[in-house]
Length: 66
Ligand SMILES: [Zn+2]
Image (cartoon, rainbow, N blue to C red):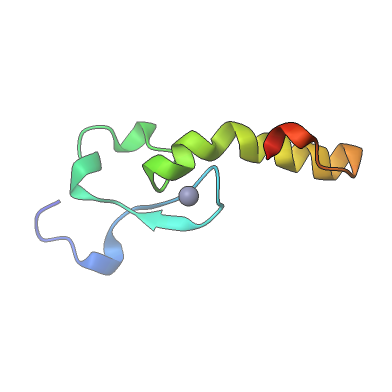
């Protein structure tokens, strides 16, 4: 990534929070596999999907989320 300007760094959308995040040095070797902006989002994913499913299809939030 040498010589690449900051604003030209690749970006992705986090699969959990839906926000865009920018390429980081620590992802240099596995950027293609990176799907989340942070460890927190990575761990949160299952609950988030369940939450989305519940609010979309059930119109209620199951107790298991809390
Ligand atoms: Zn995220």
